[in-house]
Structure formats: C-alpha cells, structure tokens
Length: 468
Ligand SMILES: Cc1cc2nc3c(=O)[nH]c(=O)nc-3n(C[C@H](O)[C@H](O)[C@H](O)COP(=O)(O)OP(=O)(O)OC[C@H]3O[C@@H](n4cnc5c(N)ncnc54)[C@H](O)[C@@H]3O)c2cc1C
Image 1 (cartoon, protein in one colour):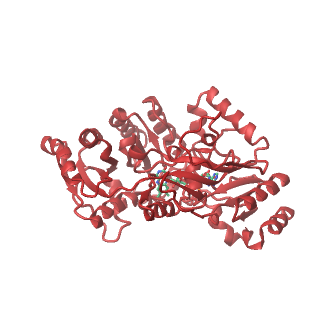
Image 2 (cartoon, rainbow, N blue to C red):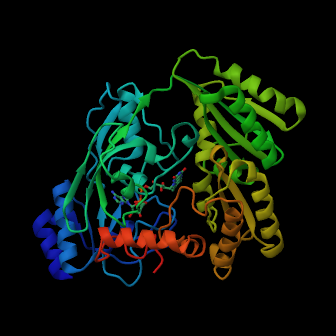
C-alpha cells in the first residue's frame, strides 16, 4: 500500500492524502457511529482531473475506492467495509458553485458543494433549489445525487433525480464522462445520467452537475396539526391537498414521542400543544402576498370541526415557522442522542399508510414487547421512518440479536402493501438483506450486468448495494 500512497501524494500533493489514523477517523466512521473500518488513506482532490488520476492509480494498484460526500448517509454507504483495502475519496474540496443561469434557471456545481450552499446560491440569484432535508448543511450534491435524496419537499419538487439536468462522472478506468448539459430535453440514446443517479458510488464518481432551479417561493404558511392517529393524519393531508393543490409543498407525520426527541435537541424547544401525533404542513407561493394562512385555515376547518384534528397552530412569523421546522428536522439528531434505533425507511401507497403502521405496531407490540417505536417522515410521499428503539435505559446493543428479525418484519409489511423497503436512503451496507429478499432475480441480474459493464474489476464501493 505504501507504493499507492506514495503515487497519490506525488500526483495530488501531500496535503491531499491523509494517512494518520486521527485524520482518517472522521471519514471512516458513519454518521450513526455504528460502522467503522480502516481506509488505506483518505484522498481529497480539488479538480476532476486530480480525482480521475486518483481513481486510475487505485485501479492500477487493485485498491477499491469509496466516494464520500458529507458522510450523512444513513445506510453506511460512504464508509469502508471490512476486509477490503479501500481508499476514501472525499469530494469536500470540490465545492465550487458557478453563477446560476437566470434565463434557463439552472446552476452548474462541483459535486462537493453542500446542498445548503446550493440553496444559498440559488436564493442569492432570486431562485430556489427544490430539494431540502435535515442534513443539507453537510450533505453534498454528489452524495444527494448518488442516493437520489428526497426530503421534505418531494411532494412538490420531487427527488434529486428530477432536479438534475446534467452530470460529469469519473469512470472506473479513470476516464471522464462530460455530460454537463443544461437542457431539459435530450433524447439522444440512453439517458446515461440516470444510471449514476442513485448509484451510491458503485458505478462511477460524480464530480459535477447541472441542477434545475425554480422561481423562489416568496410566501409560506406552516401549520402544526394534532391528530389521534395515522388515518387522521392522512385525512388532514387529503383535505389540505384538495384545497391548496400545487401550493402544498410539505406534509410530514410525526408521533409525539418523535417530536419530543426533536424538541430535546432545540434550545428552549417545546411542543406547542399536546397531541398523540402531529402533521407538520406548509403551503408556499411565488406571489409575496398570497393569502396562504387563510387557505390553510379553510383547509383545516373540516378536520378541526369533525374532531379528526384535535388542535392546530399556524406560524405567525418567519421565526415561528423556522422554529416549527427545526423541531421536525431535529428528530433524527434527538433519536441518535438518546441512543439510536434500528432504522427503517419504508414507503407504501399513501392510502395504505394507516394499515401498514397498524400492522407494524402490532408486530412490535407482540414480538418485541420491550421495544419503543419512533415513527416520523414524509406523509405526502407515503414515506415513513419506522425506527425501533430499545427499552428505556438500554443501549442499541440490547437489540443486537433481534435487529435482523425486526428489520425483516418491518420491511415485509411495507412490501406486502406494494411499497419499498428503502424509499430515500438507498441500500449501502445496511439494506443488502432487503435486496436479496425483495428484489426479483431479473432485477438483481440486470443490476449485476450494469455493474459489470461499468466497473468490471469491482473497484467502486465494494460491499454496497448489490448482494454478493
Ligand atoms: C439528520 C439527517 C436527516 C436526513 N434526512 C434525509 C431526508 O429527509 N431525505 C433523504 O433522502 N435523506 C436524508 N438523510 C440521508 C442523507 O443525508 C442523504 O442520503 C444524503 O443525500 C447523503 O449525502 P452525503 O453527501 O452526506 O453522502 P455520503 O453519506 O457521503 O454518501 C452517500 C452515498 O453516496 C455515495 N457518494 C457520495 N458522494 C458521491 C459522489 N460524488 N459520487 C458518487 N457517489 C457518491 C457514497 O459512496 C455513498 O454510497 C438524512 C441524514 C441525516 C443525518
């Protein structure tokens, strides 16, 4: 390995190659502190040419490459696996954002730019970037594209896939595919960028992207609504969608237990009112004085009058709006701070959400009696994080011998309703059993063929996405 490290240093400079364990550790350990294996070194290229050179050198030495963005992924996809010599290739220094094109509503970025920095650049140009999620301050565009990240505004602006117009990708043989086109229409053969979107670093390394921007939203109205159960939450969602149509940009479901975890992370954080479950919803408009609060009140009236909704508050200022949003976004941090959970990221058709959650509650209450459920997520997409916490006072170790069975049970329920066992987080290392169990042999074979065609020697992100 010394030869490879020496060659990487000669090509990229000493400062771009980290070998000391204390320098590597933050890149070797995943966000949840559950997965950590040593890398040969961490490489931090500044340009596509440097990155391509690093890939060529690793390929020549037969050493695998793990692309890493902000390392916020929740399926341990961006960190090394055990037993395979690997170099972590961090995109952190490739964070340039070019001036947005205000005619075409696009922006070209290097893949290491954070999602939040792209949002800020878009806002400075009077535009917005439509993908938004709790980890956006650290998560990078390359990571978000590679996981096809979703988040809180998917029901309005879709996932990353729909917000990418062009890509630049370094291939397994070190060549660069320049597909940085800024056009919405391009029916010239296979749409190659789609192969890399959601590829989780197993097919190529994304070094740049052209992203679609939108006119900036100039008015918002956010409400927190109390409901007794998931069926009530779905009813509230339906009512708001029926009244507000395209103005509906967010509709989240959060149990009280989950929101309390979020509140514990926020200074002076508290729940505005007590309820068994909550819906956090937002309307947005490009018209500055659009009467969104009144629209929200009208939309919520039937649920409040019929008792489906027990209470509701509408944020009266931007400060209140951001405080409500922060409560929701802090839920994963709160869960981690309280010892973590066996996490799941399921999707079901929205009409089946209440039945699927009831089935899951039943399974947990009967088979894993001491466990606590923590459910929250993107109701408007039918995508819920169904996380199973150990009994109060116990650590995650308490679930070590049961976690595979818990996950199999939760995922089986999602699949029985025609859903997905990984809606937005991807597969990484943690969902491989789900791939084996739930993907058909045809799907797995097609994926293996694609992998073999693009990465015949298997140097990109071994042990991720595809079961052996
Ligand atoms: C608090 C919190 C909230 C979250 N909320 C959401 C949410 O609402 N919606 C959602 O979808 N996700 C969410 N996530 C998950 C995570 O933030 C996303 O998956 C995000 O897109 C990962 O980006 P990253 O830059 O951190 O990627 P990393 O974690 O570094 O990597 C993720 C995967 O992408 C690959 N990769 C990274 N960069 C590249 C590249 N340039 N080229 C090729 N492959 C690459 C890695 O190898 C790995 O397989 C959340 C995570 C946290 C911690």
